[in-house]
Image (cartoon, rainbow, N blue to C red; front, side):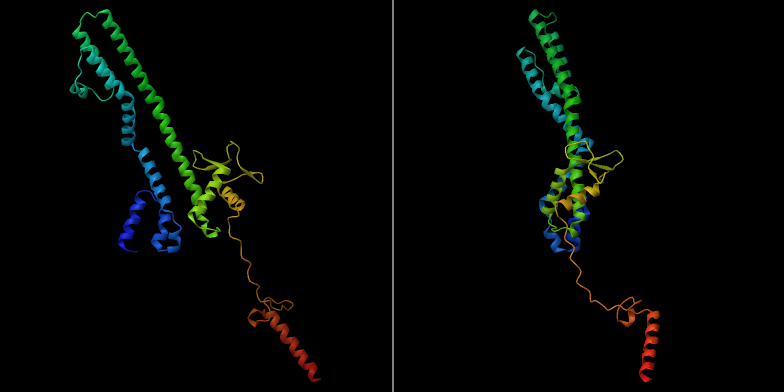
Amino acid sequence: MNEVAKKLIAILIKVGIDATKLKPFEDGDEAAIKTIEVDDIAADVYEAQKVVLTNDPEVMDELTQRITGEVLGGRQTNFIREMKEQGIVISKAEIDALPKEGRYDAMVKLGLKKMKEKAPAATGDEQKEIERLNGELAKAQEDLRVVNEETIPSMKSQWENDIKSKEKSALISSKFKAREEHLVSKSASYIRSLGEVYNSTFDVEQGEDGNYTVFQKGKKLKAMQNGKAMTLDESIEFVLTKEDALKKQEPNPDKEKHRQRPGGSGGDDPKNVSPHLKKAQAAADEKRRAMEQS
């Protein structure tokens, strides 16, 4: 294998590809390489990087800020426009000087302060406007609370569930992949189809101890076989048998039948005759010759 190929394999492993999937390239196994689907490799890279990114604090912080910005960005623009209509200007420099965390709240307070400075004795209309802006502030605070306490946790939970689902699918696929030498087909599409059958038959959950429990599809009932809960490997074998996915054992060609003598262990081949049988045969031959001479 040349250095370019070695470098490419090292890069693929670095971005999350299972080294065992790249072994055909290392071995130069052209037949096995032909069965590898490019889309499968690309999907593995995507899922590996997804796990990395969703567990990266910097990425999650940036995403949180982006979601928060989408919720509050429109309100900030509307507030600045309404202040301008009231003759109060909040400059970009003033906004940029406000802390990023809680900027909308600080901006509303700045606007109210400017309004009070402009009209120390607020008229009835101005007081109503202040109350309206206070209501706007309360609503923005509630929106922010929903984002932080409901939207983001819900999205994170969904991502985690998606990752777990992908990890379980990869595990099931690897179990079938490990049996490929015994399957009627070693193609990636066939192995993928076995995984689909499995996922339509069973649900799998991983406990805190790292062990997997197999359930009947769509039910919180353990999958049973012969009165016992199925293990993960037993459920794999169940699908292989159900789908008739294993190669049939070819019958051994009939071995040459050797004539066995009483007490013998291997037929007429002298190498297979026991010492005791040899001695008995010699005695019988000696007796036969004596009878012929008499």
